[in-house]
Image (tube, protein in one colour):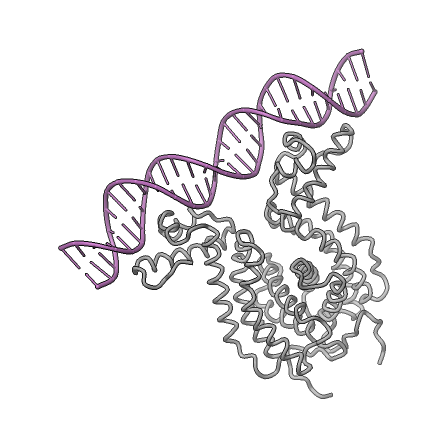
Length: 204
Length: 204
DNA sequence: GTCTTGTCGAACAGCCGTGTTCGAGTTACT
DNA sequence: AGTAACTCGAACACGGCTGTTCGACAAGAC
């Protein structure tokens, strides 16, 4: 990732244009070539190499930017109050981000080593884990399964929903509620009543 | 996929050896080249091209074989009796298959168009859908979410578990029960008690 | 035992992508 | 206005992989 401060104005503009174009191209085609990306950015291939020393580094930079934005979005979600309602809010926010950049993830998976993918996912997932553990502490979420596993379930279900949407088998409007209902059910302690749509627990 | 009947004996042997070697290589490296595969099969590259006209066709054949076996495994599972216990049995069987060939799926996803991947998944998933709909009919499974979606949840959770195992965050012994517990919870109708480990519903 | 069917290695052709170099031209800082 | 930073296009070297052709050779079928 090139230094963006202290550089000439047009250079910074080009770096931004390249990142934007790369994101757009990689979403369309995960194997997009450097030439394609440079052309889409309105920039010579040589210029691109002046900012990113290799295709891998470029893909990494694009992916880092996407994950950083995802992290910021998730950080803005209020996790206070009822854990079940907070989960619904977290799903609602995560959902859009994941859906938009799921093709980008595919591109990253082809160009970057798996450890790197995981590493960049850690920040966003920490937020999920924090909510999960709070919910477990107050009994709203199940504690009989490993926390790692439940976090993975969150991740895999949200991404699975994005794939279903892409395949046309899930309506965009139906997605958030379906995901929320599913995860809520999956996170509920065994033996407890599963309540519809994150209503506060009533002491029946 | 080459014709296997009416050919000379050594030709059939070679085709089998190539398919085996291809599966092994692609699991190790999803981008394994034709040379690698031919060498691993103890066969000349030219011979391989004599049986499979392109790399794509070879990968397709390997994947078809794997999915056919998966289908047979799932077909052998008894889905009668209590739907929740049947789900547990189905998970137990699916689990091994998916875990073994998840790297093969990655290879297929890189070489084959998405529609083809989906097409070859349909047979195994039909079995899941059949169980799901039976469970919905007798009230054991929830009916307030689209069937397509719940089938997708089954698929994505099982594959997600395989990924977690591969990353070393989930123990192989813990996987089947974790998956089963998760899916059972996700499939339970809202407002009903989630029972641990597929016990028959008791009329409390 | 003959004849068809496969097999093999080496070599070739072609393609596409990456990453680099060069020299000349342009743009922005001060 | 001058200078340093940046851009550009064309061209090059390089490598890896695919898919094909050839002629000689081996193995199974009948």
